Length: 116
Image (tube, rainbow, N blue to C red):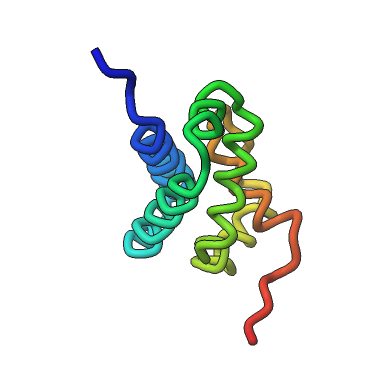
């Protein structure tokens, strides 16, 4: 039996986290932007050696660093920014055990992206 393709595994996991993130916020996901982000993840991973790809499957902190980078560089952090920033600062949004809530940091810890 062949080992799973790390790119496919990481794509599926990234998609799941994005879907969980938007579901938790009760927002319709920006589907086109999510597909672009997943493609950006694939393209980024294809430029890396297979040992790096495999290491991401074992090292959660490296994997999340890459997921965060892709979330930012793909433009997902600019989608629904106003509403997500409001929700992130709201007392009605309680922390959850969802790992995908790590994406909220992009709306609370960083300044708004430059719109030029």
